[in-house]
Structure formats: C-alpha cells, structure tokens
Image 1 (cartoon, rainbow, N blue to C red):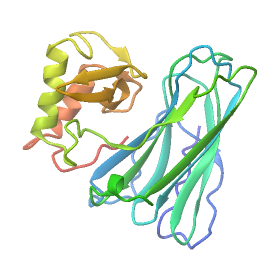
Image 2: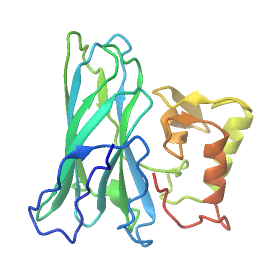
Image 3: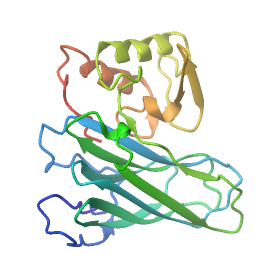
Image 4: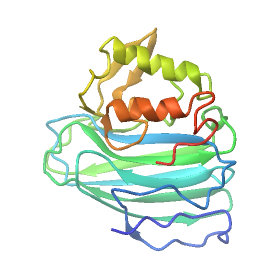
Amino acid sequence: MNNIKKATAAIAAAALCAVSALSTTLNANAAADASYKYTYRSVLLIKNSDAQISKITWNYAVLRRYYGNYAKLGNLGGTNVGGGSAGDQYESCGGTYTPSKAKPGCGIAFTVSTFAKTNDFLTNPKAFSCGASCTGSYIPKFSTEFTRPFLVGDLNYDGQVNDSDYWEMRTAVEAGMIYRSGSSLKADVTNIYWHGRSYGLYMFDMNNDGYVNSADLTLLEKHKNGGSLAGKRFDS
C-alpha cells in the first residue's frame, strides 16, 4: 500500500493531497527536518471487545506551526484509507478505517503522529482537533476513543525525553508491571499504574509496532542523555 501523502507547509493554502492507502510500515516523514525533535502520538482505540464495527470515519488536524500528520495501522488488522489537506491555519488528514473482523476486539486501530519543534504541543488549546464516528451492527457507547496526544518517551511528564524516562520504564519492567523478560504484550488499553502515575500500555510502545517488549526499552535507552538518538524524535 502507498503511504498517505502528507500536507506540508510548502503546499499552497487549500491544496489537496491525493488519497492513498495508509501503509502498515509507514516510515518517518523525511520532509520534517531535525529541528522537529518532539514526537506526539494519538491513538484511536477500540475499547469494547463486543463491539461489531464495520467502519470508522475519522479526522485529525494540527496547527501549521507543527508538522502533521501521518497515520500508521495498529495491531487489530484491517485497512485504513485517507488523505490530507493544507489550509491557512491547519493541516489535516482523515479517512476510513475498516476492521478485518466484524468484532475486532480491544486494541489500537491506528496511531496518528505529529512532529514539533517545541514541547508546547499539549499546552496549546488550539494545537489539534480530532474526531471519529462508527458504523456497524452493535456499537456500545464509548466503544472507541481518540486518546489525547502524548509526547512519545516522556514517561515522567516533564516535557522531555531523557535518562529519567528510561529508568521509569526499566524499573517498571523489572517489577513485572509491563512485560517480563523474553515476552511481548499487545499494546492495548490496559492501564498501568507506576510511581503514582497512570499510563495506557500503548504509551510504552516506543517503536509503534503495536507491541510492548524489550525492543521498546532498547529504543528508549538510545534516546536518553548520551544515547545515539538523544535529542531526536521517534520516527514512527
């Protein structure tokens, strides 16, 4: 499948990106230069295992001072078709997600990532907007949810990714709170409580592959102070 074509600041206002299928292995957006070092991610969750969903229509927009957006399929399977547009103030994308099963179960339909030069994305009330609506034969209330964006790797919520975040995850792993050595868990809606903070399990999926395992801890280690990826964004 082809990558979704992102709208960039270089595109004239109101220009439309062509519609294309979203890749399950979508790589980093090369057009975002290294100064966009913060990666924010929002997740469309299916929260009710009994829900019978045939289609989810979604939209996501960010202010043009940030670099948005690209989407990547999650671990529930299915297809995601979308497109994007650039306007005077917002860059947006949206489309249709079709699960591969009538009852897809609990988990991540897809993720949407945004790059930023500064770590003020979450404190700007106009930074983003999103929405999703479902069709199907049985859709209980609150079956789906677009999570509020989070800064990937920032586990102590201080707006930075460094040593302390790595140790938050490592100690949680050592305590058996996330996964045990040699195991792998689906990045789902499970709540994790650690050191007085609450996390969705999906927040530990650093490489955005739909699973939480040792590869995510290794990647976060590279982003800590002195690591090979220190001060750089997560390109997924």
